Length: 99
Length: 284
Ligand SMILES: Cc1ncc(C[n+]2csc(CCOP(=O)(O)OP(=O)(O)O)c2C)c(N)n1
Ligand code: SF4
Ligand code: SF4
Ligand code: SF4
Ligand SMILES: [Mg+2]
Image (cartoon, rainbow over the protein chains, first blue to last red):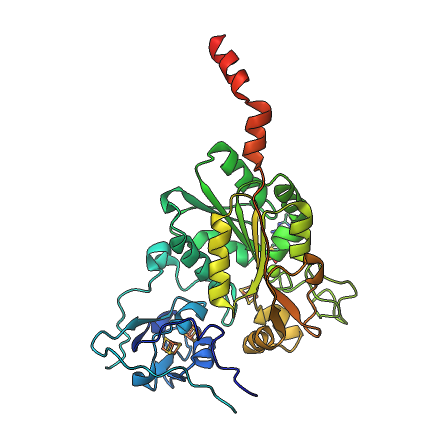
């Protein structure tokens, strides 16, 4: 399938470098954030949270473009991104995945 | 930078009853995303949140009112709109937001919806359409697609679903749109526009119910989201008669109506409380 991981509004969204915060014990492991992150920053962790779900963990910390998509698609208020103010300037556009 | 799990606060925590989080919605349920969009839109719209109330009926979606850190009302099944109408008429300063499900708003509460739109009551109605009665175990709803399996249509639904935007338009709603939870930013913008529209504003949000609808139709939550991505087209201003829900043919999303016309209160005041009458009363 072609291009389906590109967020629908990637062009409108300003890209900076982001830091992802995960409130692990709120997560129910739906995988929405992992599946729809435009930079594949997230993966399921092997760990369980207190409710027995596998929360996401950040596997590519430098790649987050602070697009907030994980934050707005998450049904659980369990993840959000903030701008990394120590890393200004360059951020690449979202990758398009062909798989 | 090391990502941290000892986070401070989610940006919506100030509008959430965090003591009730995690909420009751199942893993992969889309209601939480629609609800979050509603909270974000309420903040972004600039409306006075001190004067904003949320009203829900009964159902999984109807639990929304119980999670917002504002005055809110969890009414009986189907009665969110009449309750909201009463609130608005009693205190016209309030911004009244109805957040509820397709069964609540369009089956048991269907007539209230029609008449709320007809009278153009100045409220905002966000309907989470998950194509079935999620809470009670996945029965057929007025919105269940033709042929879809539910507990009460085990061989497939013999009836077609309501086209909700068409109904809203035909009944007189002043704002009508449809989005899916995957179109998160469009949905949020649209709820914001609906909040700012003066009149009966309706936003339909398509949302997965993996546990009941999905299970019987071999559709996991992520499958529903893929369907929302691959089988929808955005066509603002499409005629509401073109908006049938049929994922095989494709489902149209967008903003379909955005007008201004006299509200229920405008007409009530003009008819029952014209200035002459008020003066007469004062003089008497
Ligand atoms: C008067 C009355 N009739 C029936 C019910 C049972 N009931 C509870 S929720 C529900 C349907 C909810 O469907 P929907 O509004 O689509 O919400 P969902 O759970 O799908 O979000 C029904 C029929 C009830 N609570 N009260
Ligand atoms: S903010 Fe965007 S890029 Fe960063 S993790 Fe979330 S979805 Fe991925
Ligand atoms: S979207 Fe939210 S609930 Fe789902 S896996 Fe990601 S953090 Fe967990
Ligand atoms: S039953 Fe369906 S609608 Fe209700 S919380 Fe679970 S997934 Fe959501
Ligand atoms: Mg429903």
